[in-house]
Length: 462
Image 1: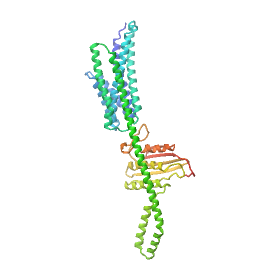
Image 2: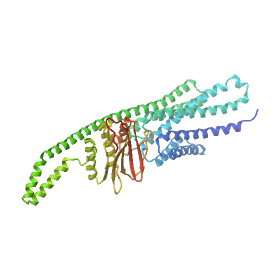
Image 3: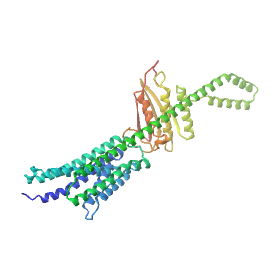
Image 4: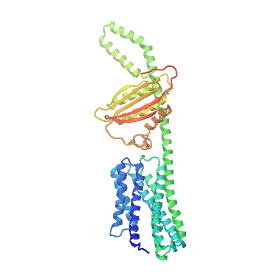
């Protein structure tokens, strides 16, 4: 019978190295959807593996539990350095991976022990001593494969149910979400210590306690996933509630714009009604050669005319009011406003839908306009049934993109009502079989909105 002692030792050393490499890869896969810097996810997984290898080959005695913590800690530092935002979420990911890796590979270890113990005590193996080494190799491969499959299954479940991956997390949310992982880790350590003590004292492996341990680890993983699912459901409900509140605010804004439009037209009718009297008064002042009084009266009349008219004629009174308010706000902020907007007359486009688009887009444009010469531009045009709106503003920063929606991530807190503007605009665009596109070039943030219109009476082009 050949001497396999050297080969046994080689495999005994190699399996933990392979396990560490697989765990580093799993960490990278977990981080990929959450981090914009993909090199950072690779670096985090690599640092984790290298740290674990350093502890593995260190001549100093280190507890496995502490070495795992150090590995995750250094990976967390790399995550923060390569992607400097949403640190609370990174804490959650680090702790979750620590717990998940412990649970899944412990499940693999229990399967390894139970199957190995059963196989080596069979009559088949007793009659074939030469098969023990291949059995050992097969069981090591089974352990690695089971640990990898269990871990990746847990990661896929987490990624599937964690839908709002780019949404910032608060400290309270992190603490709540980490409770299943932290409690599971405590149980994992207790079970591990008891199992090692039991095996050391009795020289046997208890089937009953192994089954309980296996169920515990599986339930711990499921609890983490369910907690994430509940968290995302609550967040989605909160966002729906906030969006409904914002929709109510937009309805109130439309009513406000309608009242303003009515006010403008009432003033126009009033001025028209009194215009004859104003002209007679000016003629009398002019006939009496009262130049100073004539100029003063004329200035007051011009002021009255300016106040009575919106100075903007887009083709719809509601959009006139919105654009007029935008012009007033841009003057206050010292932002140049370039307007070439026309309402798509004789189409199925509703004034309310356009007000949602203009309110959200122009509010964002005014708020984020940057540079020495700040500007906002509004352009619209039609080509057959395609109605295009382009709203741009000066912008010198960089954009971070939400991998789920494909839209830029705002730096504002969504809980304050920010961050939903582009989503609301996209909803309106899709109502008209269109969509939106965001582009950043030549120091300009450009939002393009496409609406596919249907002609109602006559068609026209701008």
